[in-house]
Each structure stands twice: as structure tokens, then as C-alpha cells.
Amino acid sequence: MPELPEVETIRRELEKEIIGKKIKSIEILGTRSVRRHDNPKQLIAQLQGKKITQIRRIGKYLLFDLIGDDILVVHLGMSGQLLRAKGTKEPIPEHTHVIITLSQGGQLRFIDPRTFGEIFVTRPAEGNPRMIPAELLHLGFDPLANQISWMQFAAMLSQRNTQLKPLLMDQEFVAGIGNIYSDEILFAAGLRYDRKCNTLSSQEARRLHRSMIELLNEAVQLRGSSLADEAYKDIYGESGDFQGQHRVYDREGLPCPRCKRNIKRVKVSGRSTFFCEHCQL
Ligand SMILES: [Zn+2]
Image 1 (cartoon, rainbow, N blue to C red):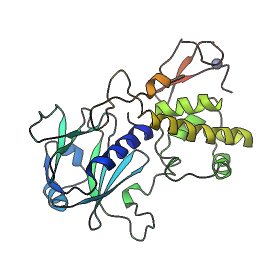
Image 2: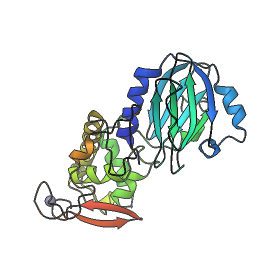
Image 3: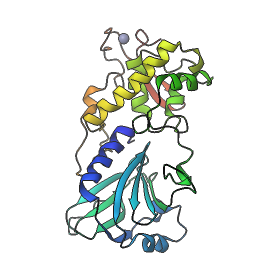
């Protein structure tokens, strides 16, 4: 599932490719991808002819700011891809649900075999200074786009009586982290997935804060992670390179890069969790 580094990679590529371009037409082949709209025709009418002025990201959501006040929101869900086609004649891949044709040539195609992803059009919430739509106001802070200090972070952790991994994956607490990066961040910080948030010393909270920002930045530098199932591709159809840097994720039984003991796997709320019993306390 694409997490913050993958979505940020796509955002940067879109910024290079489609800012200033106009939406010529939209074709909806799978209505489940636009399920927030009762009437897909209205969605099409709302987007046609609109110029794309900015591409933003909040957590795992991409926001295409359009001229006027409209915002086109894309969430890739489990298996979504946003692929750039140079011309309209390029063959359409299987599971293509939405095709956005741009006026200066080319298309963006939303492909999503598992259909957990979605696309919708909205506007900024009334009076919201950051121009965030109401549908996304529940999201917590974005660890790269709107950084908070480690002391603020420590104070937030101290108020939670939950385990660390589920909290890092809670989009209402911090937006953008999922199963892969939560394991990698916790390994980098030397903290176990099941540590209670309110038992962290200030030094541990500081380490977790630093690991979170550093690791996500490193993953963005390497354009995210593409796993064996190949679900994640950037807009050019290329895989990321960060999977080669994973230190615990999907490495059960392999030696820990720090202590050489075997990496363990457990299930936490149905999700595989990888960690080193010796290096993470
Ligand atoms: Zn270890």
C-alpha cells in the first residue's frame, strides 16, 4: 500500500508534469472509484476545462488544486496507481477506472485492481486557513509537510495509552504512515511495536520523532518502496528503490543489521509486524 514516501514521489512528479495544464475531459470506467459522488456526470462537468494550479499532499492524499476553488482529491488505497500516458493512443491497462485527458496532450490514468482507492472533487472547508477540504480535516499532522517539534510530539505521545505501532498508523494522529514505515521507524528508534506511548522517556520520544522524519525523508529520496507484489509504481510506471534499504520489514528470520539475531514477525491487529527483540525495547 502506498504510504507517505510513495505518494510524495508521485506528487513531485505530477508537479513537474501537469501544473498549468487544463483538464480536457474525464472518462469514468469504474464508478466505485468515484463512490462519493452520486452523479459521476456532475463530477465530470465540474472538472472539465479546469486548469491545475498546484499539487499538494496531506498524508496519503493527493490534492490537485484547480482554478476557482475546486480540489480534485486522489487516494490510492491499497493498490492504486496514477500513470501518465504521453498520448491518448497508448493501450489502456487492465483495472483502469478513471482517465483524465489533459488539454496539452497526454493522460493521467487511475488504475486500481482492489478498488479501495478513490477520486473525488471538493472545496476547502469554510474558513480553513490551510485550504483543507472538510473530508480531510480528521487527518493528523503530516510529518514532512507540517513538522511539529519533538517536544510537541512527546506531549502528544504522553497522552496516549495505546501501543506505538497502532498509534503511528493512526491517520488521525499522524498522517501518511502505514505498515512498512511504522516498522522501519520503530526499528530506527530502537522501540518495540507494543511499547505503551505514555511510557516513553523524553529521550525516547525525541529519538522516535527524529527517526520518523529522517526515515521518511530517506525513503522519499529513493522514491519510495515497491514490494514483491509490485503494486506501487510512480507516474512513469517505475518502481521505487527504498525496499533495498528496509532493515526489518518483510525480513523474518534474516539477521538484524545491528545485532545479527533473527528478525521476528508477529501479527498486530491483523498486520504483519517485523522487529528485533534485542534492539527494540
Ligand atoms: Zn537486533
